Image (cartoon, rainbow, N blue to C red; front, side):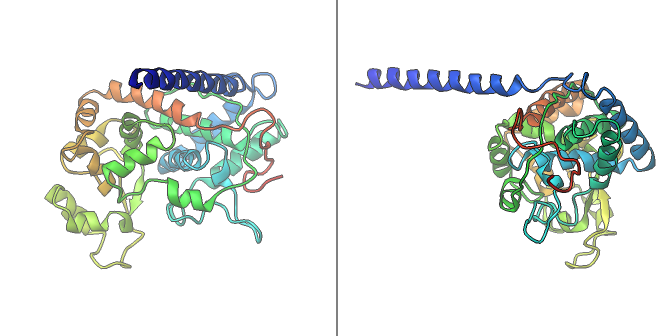
Length: 325
């Protein structure tokens, strides 16, 4: 009986695998790196030029755009839903706990969208603009490049509830981080390498205060230096900023992982990746081999960027990224 049951379960597993592969094949049939070659060949050069101009003026914006795509893809897929503004009858994702008063870069996407609409009206989605802008930001800051699959369409809705529940936070444990990524079809290894995005950018005192005053797995001098600009009392200096990577704040490299091995992770969730757990070996590898980090980061970004895209006739191509047509 046990053997027969195993055979039945194996058959169902095989059928499920085949069905899953057919579904993914159908999705990828609509996504292609050259999706706009005929309909809007100017699109990618416009994005690249705008990102260079933006980051030349404010390098930090590269990290903000990278975070913006993360927060889009983790809520019902990479569909541009995070870009939608609230209206009197609609509440979007911008006011969620993980996004309010911290997510930024919307105006950069607006500028790029306007420039593209001027030459290719109603052709290029906001979701694709964000995906390409993210890639170009990483490259501009010294990181690796990758081929962005294109052809996503924009969502006509958003989910405040899912934004509150799906996005991992700075106080997360290793277990909850792994679970949050697995819920998006990403592995524990993907989580570790994508966390390397914290090699650029800055964070507010309110998100690392408890770590620098209450945790023991932190370099003492590092904690003391942060305390100078992040007072102990809640409410005081909540929005004072500190770099996620204090050594190369605007350079996309593997210093983040070196920092973790020295007890210099800014967030509790950062240091969880090197705290005697299952992620320690991967962190060690990336801390000594930047090319390994870059290679794995590229692969993971492609996987994340292809999370549940809207394609074909699904969704729409917004003419304004902040509202549905």
